Image 1 (tube, rainbow, N blue to C red):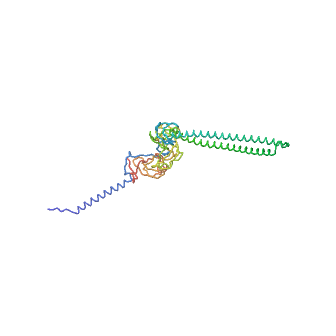
Image 2: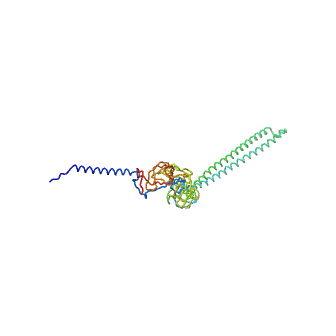
Image 3: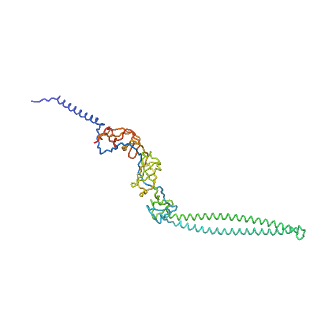
Length: 418
C-alpha cells in the first residue's frame, strides 16, 4: 500500500529554518554594532604604555643628538709644489705651533734661490762701484768750483790794484790793460757760477742714482727673500697648538701648490653640533641654555647658531660649551644635548602620546578608575617637551591615558583592557 507525503509541510519547514537563520544573523550583527564603541574591542594591558597626568612646573626642552667638533679647524697647505720627502707626524698626534709636520723636496726652487743670491751679490758690487764713481765725479766738480773761485779772487785783486793806481793818476797801468782785467774777472766769475751749478746738479744726480740703486737692490732682496721663503715652504709646519685630525698624503707623492696636506683641530676648544628635528626647532633660539651629556659628564652650553638649512628633516644647532671640558672630550665624540626652551609653572602635563603635536586638539583614550576600560576623549595640548606635553584642557591631574600607538583602534569609542 502506498504512503502519500504532504508537500505543504516540507515547504513550511524550509521557511522556518530560513527565518531562524535570518534572526540569528541579525542578532549577531546587532550584537557587533551594539558592542562596537561599548568596549567591544579588547586589548592586552601588557601591550600598552600608560601616562599619568601630572601637575607642577613643566620644563619645556628639546633633545638633540650630535658630536663634539673643534671650534677652530685649519687646513695646512703649501704655496709651492714638491715631492713628499719625509712625514714626521701622523694623524692623531698632538702638535704645537711651528712643529715640523712633513718635508717636501724641489731642486728647482733651491737652484733658483742660489741664483738669486748670486745676482744680489753682483748687484751690490755694481751699485758700490757706481757710487764710488759718482762720488769721484762730484769731488772733481767741487775742485773745479774751488779753482774758479780762486781764479776769480786773484783776478779781482789785480783789478782792484789797477783801479787804485788809475785813481791816483799813476801811468803804470793803461786803460786798455785795466779793461782786459775787468773782462777776465767777469769771465772767471761766470765760469765759477757755472761750476757751482754743475756741482749742484752732480749732487742731485748722486742722490737720484743712489735712490734708484736702492730701489733695484731692495727689489732684488725681495726676490731673494721670496725664493728663500719658497724653499722654507718645503718644510710644512703646524700653524697652531692642535690635534692632527687628517693627513691625506703618502711618502713620495707629488704635491701641487695649494693642496691641503694636514687638518688641524684646536686643543681644548670645542662646540657641540646637535641635530634637532625640524618640527621642534621653531622654539629654539640663540642664547638658550643647553646641557651636553658626554655619557660620562654633563657640560653646560649656550646656543650660538641655528643653521638655516634643513637636511634630512633635521636642523643643526651649534652650542658653545661653558666651563672646563671633561677629560674624555675629543673631536667627533657622540653627545646628547637638552636645550632648555621655557619653564611653565603649575600646569598639567603628561607623557607625550605617540604622533601628538604641540598646540593641537586630539583624541586620546582615557582610562577608567578600574583601568579595565579606555574611553575616547578630546584633549587640547600645549607646549611639547622631550617626553612630555602640556595639557591645556580635557584632562585632570591623576587621570591616566594611553600614550602608545592607538591607530588600530579607530572607530572604537571604548576599548576593554584585560
